Amino acid sequence: MKDKKIFEEYYITHANKIYSVVYRMVNNHQDAIDIVQEVFLRAYKNMDSFKGLSKFSTYLYRIALNLTYDFLRKKKKGRKIENLDHEDFSFYSFNTNFEKNLYDDQIVEDIKKEIENLTDKQKTIFILKTYEELTYEEIARILRKRVGTIKATYFQSLQKIRENLKKKGVIKNEM
Image 1 (cartoon, rainbow, N blue to C red):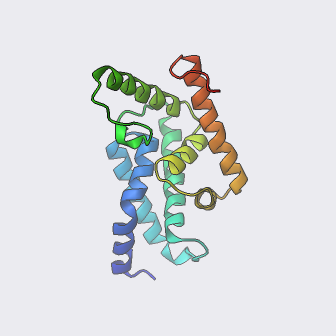
Image 2: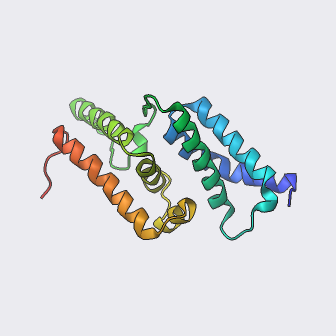
Image 3: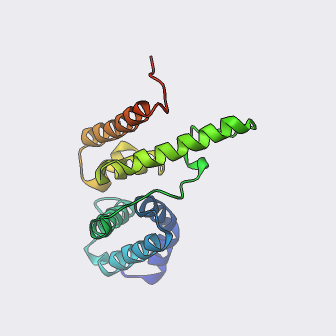
């Protein structure tokens, strides 16, 4: 099945989503581009071993995450999320009030820092669920974990972010 035309269609269909996940994990455009290229190279080279038991996108995500984890292990020192835009946060709303916008900007920065404090697995699940809007089932297939494990890890990620923001006084106690 090494038809180059079909593979080009896969690339066109999936490259941006794969890039989005990888970029959010490594926080560097050039590194993300390099990893995405390697993802598609490996997928193409190993196309004959793809059995079709899952969606092709699941196969690509799996390769992407493995390469990203390898990259992060090698780079272990100081990772930062620097280029998340406000529109990435569904709870961020534009307001013409300057002081409110300054406060919102600070919240976004605080959230970026807290996402960075998650473990690689928590960060992966958080990114796939929050930014890529994948279902728990899709994430479970990609990571080869049980749906319950994915739900629990996502919940723990949210709790960790929420608790740290409460400690910093960024958000108030709820109910």
